[in-house]
Amino acid sequence: MAVDPRQIVAGVLTVTMFVMLGNMITRDHFYPVDSDISIHSTSKQSLGNGPWMKGGESLKPCWTKPVPQEADQSEGFVTFSLTNGPEYHVSQIADAVIVARYLRATLVIPDIRGSKPGDKRNFEDIYDVEHFVRSLDGVVKVATTQPAEVSARNLAVVKVPNRVSEDYIAENIEPVFTSKGNIRLATYFPSVNMKKTKEKSNIDSIACMSMFGTLELQPEVNEVVESMVERLRTLSAKSKGQFIAVDLRVDILEKKSCQGDSSLKSKSCYGPEEIGMFLRKVGFNKDTTLYLTQSRWDSSLDALKDLFPKTYTKESIMPIDKKAKFLDSESSELEKVIDFYMCSESDVFVPAISGLFYANVAGKRIASGKTQILVPADIPGSSAALTDYISHYVSKKNHFAYSCFC
Image (cartoon, rainbow, N blue to C red; front, side):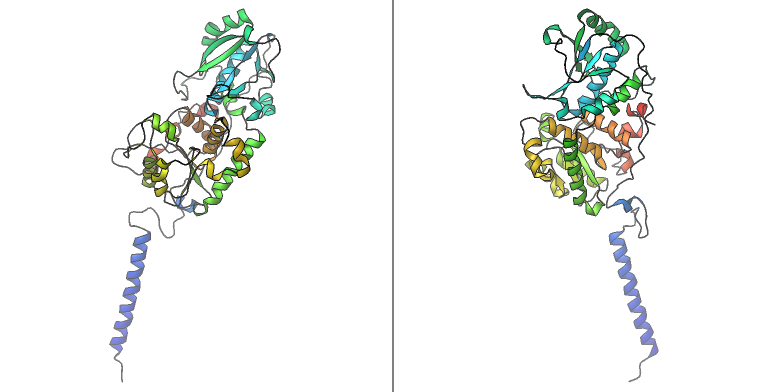
């Protein structure tokens, strides 16, 4: 039977039409018209699924190491303790070094005290002593142990406000030191103040060097942090090894009454569901890996895990042979230290809680070029642009770290 050529042409056109229609449907389903992604895109999506951004280059220190003092060294000592966690430690170190140098006193390496009575550790249990002493060479004289002649009986306790000034030292600390010979500093924090000062003072270089150049983790603690980072990168294959660290601790959220409110507002803390909704809003998909500073799983985190199934706490990724020492001990100091450095090492940091932890993690990240710090907020107009949520410390470059690095 003869076939009409017009039927053949019509058949070919029909098949071609369906193929084209199928391609259009596929393209519109995976690549929406209003998306900034194209089939041939080499944009930020090439870094993995989600709005990951390339990290900036590490900045170089702008400070000049203070020259050795010409005046005679005094015979007195300045002692102090590191308290409340690593976010406080960096500030306490800076204030102590500034005071000791001004007084030309010998700085005694501090012990580390937790929030519970009797919770006391040696400096070397967490930090590298040799690096600390070496970094302060020529700045202040350092004693690795408290001299026998210095005791509680001949130590005058002096309160020191964070980011202490030379005027304050001259008026409130130097007279006591001159009278007593030895002092013990007790740093207090009138407010969270890590913003860059408009005018540099004489002690800014000392503060910069003390905050960013003196503290390094001792080898065992550093090994635990690095193994946890590596574990998270292994679990993040679909985002090319990248992960988000979220400072989210249930006990603090409950104290601040942050649980249960699912709306994003301008406030000081955000609950698990709010964090999940925020991350989805700015473009992170369900395959994104999250690390939480919460040590063990809590049922209140289930809403977050529903949105991001690959959500982990220290309990689930810490090496088994390290849990007894770093997770199951009565002290929480080691857990806080791990969290501080995990949040400093992650590809993205999201503070669910405002405060000094956020401020000092931001400083450490700025110094290393890891400036993708996203702060939840209710932006007018329901904007989902990632840049709207970049921390003001970065977008306005108003963190003290920008006084120290360039």
